[in-house]
Length: 514
Image 1 (cartoon, helix red, strand yellow):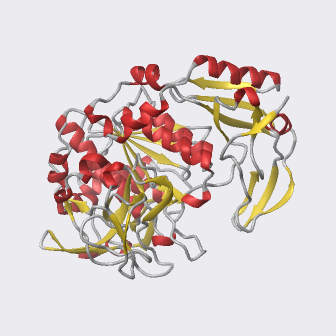
Image 2 (spheres, one colour):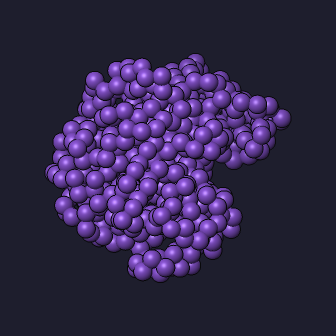
């Protein structure tokens, strides 16, 4: 049977990784096969405009933009021919999850699976492309899960264990007040938080919110692809990310329900968590907060496209998505001397969140600049994508380099918005029984998620994908004009360090009128 490569599925080993042995032939593996959706071009147009206030409910979305059952059936027939089990299918998420042994999957997809060793451990991987039968080439858009390398890291920076340190750190409610968030609690809304490791302990949450004098929010956990809430007990582990995200959202929007979606740190796990949240008809999130990511250059084209399609789906259903832009400045941690942006923040259907340092006096912001603590010490991510075209709402905007050269965006500019992220002006949180001050752009995504939960609750509707409206209202932001993130510097208006700037909360709410 003739087979063809799935476009954009080519893989190379992680830098420095070496193959050490073949994957055990009887190891059981689950893979996610994504099939084409109906009306894909129409969905992209719908999503890019923010839906123009016309958000679809889930059932209508599936009917208009879901997968075709006939396509799902063809993938199931392919699986049966290779002895693979069909674990689950979903028209809205357009996925088929298959299970089989490594030997069966190697034969089905014409790949060689190997164990690789690299600086941080081992992973199961492959080199080259994934292959499928010719009759599926127009149907299948991605095959994910054969490779289980970690794809993302949490974008938080801990200043260390600390007590309250006066004006150099803030509780989330203090920052909400500095940014003039509108009154409200977000009651009736659900905020989804995506996590790829670590966990939280309810006792810590109770102690934290009791200390703030806030009633603890309702927090629920959803396990994706067999992942669970698994706190390590180490405040410097992914627990710091999980607790930071929950505590920021819960402190600024205590009336909102919080659902934490735990998934494996793989491309398929990450995607499935986002997709699960967007299509969760039980919890019905109206906002998704993502504080994990990796350099755009480290993703396969099939993954970039698959994630962006999931974000388009979220936008069409009126779900706002916020993602941290990274904590390693304009390099995004890539040591090649070039500029890189972080994904999924660089998706044009996500609101990318950059970072600042805040100085406050007398209950007001007295100074704010780009977060940049120097090489290796953290800086807000930002720059220009190499994967995505500049969206219409960024037309004519310019990225200004540190040398002062301003270039009109031909590709998607990152970030869109910003907020306090410097650990030196960080967030007071509780992690694994310890009070800490944490920063990073991972704090900015849940801060904005909490703001939008309040806006949704007050307006009694979903504002959905906010970028088109916000770019039309630059006056709703504190324009950050001081500082740089490495290769780019702040400038009047949008820039590749802090986007439009930091929120004037009530003005942001007004800009998002239905």
